[in-house]
Amino acid sequence: MAVHSRYLDLATRIRTRIEAGEWEPGARLPRLDDFAAQYGANRDTIGRAIAVLESEGYVWAVQGRGIIVRHGMMRLRRPRGNLVKRNVATDGPGYSFPSASGQEVWKHHVAPTVSAEPLTDPRIAKLLGVPPGTTVTRRFRVTGPQSEPPFQIAVSWIHPRGLAYAPEVTDQATGPGDWLYRLEQAGHWPISWIEFHRARMPTKNEAALTSP
Image (cartoon, rainbow, N blue to C red; front, side, top):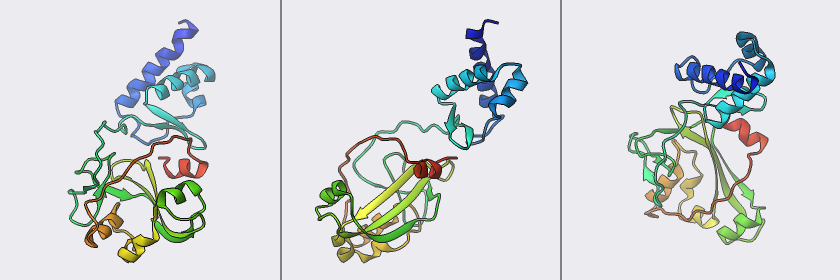
């Protein structure tokens, strides 16, 4: 078989095994050397086959963790709205977000934190309308649906007025979006927001927090 088509054939074979469920979503694939031994191919050819599968969304390469199966983890496209939706799938407080449906149950994948910190980022200070260095409340969350690996890191900076109006927002949440529930209880609703979209590569710490 010609070299240029050999890696495509290997990509098809590995893709078929992934689709058959040989590896669960989030599982780590064998090493390139192991695949090379299985298929009697060289390591570079296997690498090209894996690159094809990564471009198709079947796997992703996570530094320090290997090749992770992504098949079965892709989320359906959903229209975005401008209102936070109550998480109707649970009895307790909590909300789903634009990337989720109202029926999904989201959870914290790491312990949430809340702290009072000086706001050193001038861009965020401007958005909040406070001078840089102002002490504000910072909430840090790593969330996602119960059935999937985490894919959302949320950092919330709360204006000092928020504590005056609803000091309960500093409480540890029982579920994702619980601080929004606290605001609602205090009479500040309906809740809406303005979105500003920017893109950058994740830091090493961010990538580690959202790796399967």
